[in-house]
Length: 243
Image (cartoon, rainbow, N blue to C red; front, side, top):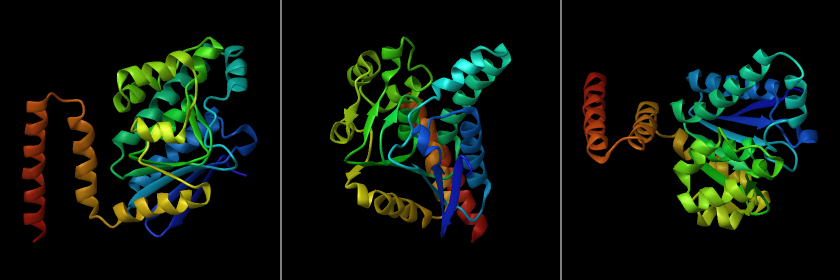
């Protein structure tokens, strides 16, 4: 079986992490397959939204630690490539023009928590948990920290990475890390509803909305207003050309 399952429901591309025996831990093949799957979906004109979930009881256990041991006993170039791949993967979501809904079906830990929060919309099973346990293993929640501190308040984010304690779905919702918490049997239904709602939006409007959204989050207020004005001008010109 492939490490990543791909399916379509109308204009929605469904990507499923498929290493259930490893709680969908991210090794290089799965990370590469997911990065390629996201980019392919973004290029596909027939796809207007993406849903990401995990096979089996877990969403994603984070990095495959057994692979790290193997890489470190091998060439340094492989270790560097693994680091680059992790950074590319977690940075890819905001660069896509199509919205991504994460359907967090079970435990999302470390890099898996990073993937769960990287989506534009996150739906979480009430039985799932999110955590950053790296510090308990003597390492740092490094790459995933960049996204976490942009979505949670500083105190809450620091607590997560400094204690390594996981949080329940209700707490994740309280912190604004996810949009909705639902019963396990309703998870995919709710995620697909979000995806189909956004897939019904004109692709140009959705792409412009997502691009501007991630741009203004990094800008000072006045520059963000200017970026909004520029986007308005481009969209008016686009609609005029189409009419």
